[in-house]
Image (cartoon, rainbow, N blue to C red; front, side):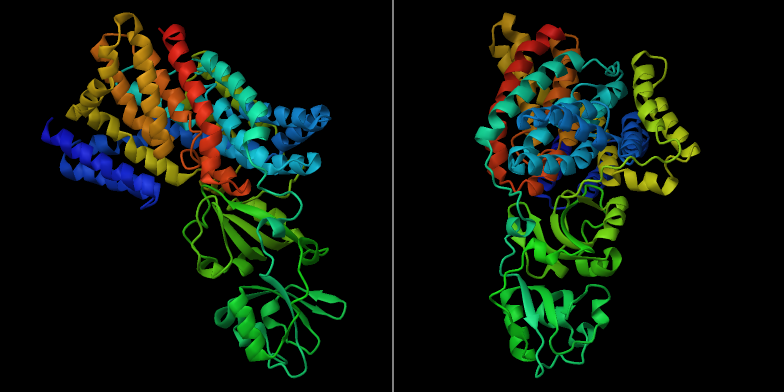
Length: 595
């Protein structure tokens, strides 16, 4: 092994370990790796930055915009809700229709956007049918993964594999080349989740009360201001209630009036009842130092928190949210959004103490008290996905129908070879801009720039692996079982080993990283075997999307993780048998369908 190959292997190991332990954001890891490749001289500077002009990367960015344009029409939520009503007399028939719709939409759109659109619909169906969301949300994520394998544009993984192959001089993956086997996976996968989800997944997430679901008892309280209290005549700002006691004011009830706006400037009067959120030590110190009465016999519920103007909702921090990495204090969340955060659920833990200093992460679930008339603004901003409220209105802006027509038309022209896919995607974006369906600022919000930077920075890895000979070394190691197998079984053993390695890599890293690193290996394996690389290339496409055993391997899994109140082991227990089934199917069918 050459020095360059060893160095590249070390750099890759450091990057992959950083991804696994989330030591840095993914875009920062990608850029650090790119800089290391340039400084070490493994690849020339011009080739190192070529990923930023790569067709696959630009196509993915354009598809983010098209998905956003279709999402903001509200059409898909309405179609899904009406289909579920039409076929939902039996509750699991309604859920099955929803999963099928999600899979079909994911074949056309970015599946992260599809899940963002359908989580609120799924939660509404769960309430209507009295089904725990824990029984539905993992199947929802898996359905989007199944659908993503139906077409070239169904997932960014397919586009990346196609781009790497094209860079190496091979033919790109066709628009519907994946469809035959993708349909097999879709049918088998949907049968699996419909039959086993009610039996294998726990009913952990409740549908009755959000405050109960977040275990907020004891953290929401009522305080009464008495004549002798030191609060009388002072404001929240003067008392510095949040800084000194870590207690957040939600509302003041004065006689029959409920005051919930501009609370920092409200003068306390005797008899005022304060609705607050705070941990027990802070509430106790506030009671002791200010001589307020703690109405400990009163348990605040979701209904008591809500009035005609305010509502309690769950909101998910989206993948490209500007809130990621910031604290509620930094954001001045109350002033910026007109809402109060009661609690944050991160994976299995519910955070309630020192919320203002907690740095937000992707897929954090926030329990929020918001003014009803601010919900639309909260949703439109795109930083948070409100999952417990569904807006079933068709936004009939002028030319709202253009995205509905352009996306299928672009796919058809690309499939027939009349138009290059990148040209079709960029052309569709330009048409939407010209007709005012979307505006330039919305484009910047629609694209997940961290994903784009990460992918663009990782693209040169494929060329580096081929240049240094590392791809050949890894390919030789992967081919060891093939060499030991009887010659007649060689194609099946090769596909089985490559699929297994790729699918395990996508669980621990990311699907994009697994695809970029292992596609050059597949090309080298085909060259060593003297066979057509097509079957091995498509093996990478299917395996890199088969992330069922962990919530971290795929963004859609992370999105449903908090909303469904899942544990890590729920994915492993439910996803491992499905992963085994798909591995056996791929190993048996790919050498036959793509010889």
